[in-house]
Amino acid sequence: MRLELIDLVTAPPGRRSPRIGPVSLALDDGEALALTGPNGVGKSTLLAAITGRAPLLSGECRLPAGSRIRLVEQIARPDRDLPVNGHDFLALAEADPRPPAPLSGWLPRRLDQLSGGQRQLLRVWAGLTAPADLVLLDEPSNNLDRRGRRTLFELLDHRPPDRCLLIVSHDADLVSRVPRQVEMRPA
Image 1: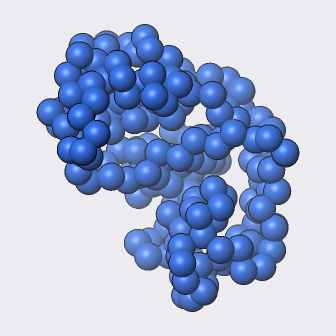
Image 2 (image 1 turned 90 degrees about the vertical axis):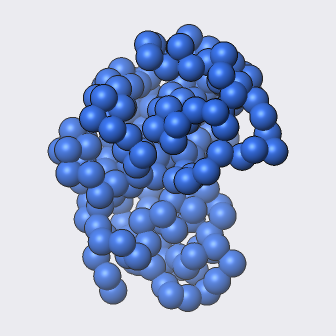
Image 3 (image 1 turned 120 degrees about the vertical axis):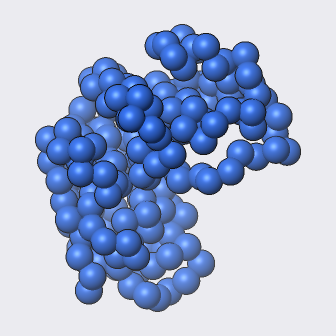
């Protein structure tokens, strides 16, 4: 699996401006890359362009045909209209149903009864272990306390070795753990 962005210019979903880019980068099978930069520079919009939810104004986004992409977005509140527990959530996501502790202890509980950090870690686990060639994590350390951050780092360190991983983050500790970094800057 290889992701290639070649002079990609995009805009937020449903809009044609402000323009973001051009951005060029490549990510190969099993490689991890952290995308950094100030708020509002378009990091999350770039993830939306990779998944096809934001317009491609120019340039290219190359992925092999049939590539499976998993996006773990930033979500502040649980969806109370979908009252599922952790077991159900992992089954729906087609993720590995056997997460490590402490995540395994949360599985019987409804997602809307977990803390924001607990939900975030279950969502990251699902993203990393569900069938995917490319995993996109948007600010995965949000809502995490010190213990949750350690758990996140362990999950990332033990991700399936064939997964490409693109992480958007402002978290310097998290970014320093990723072998490659690309900084986006305002146009």
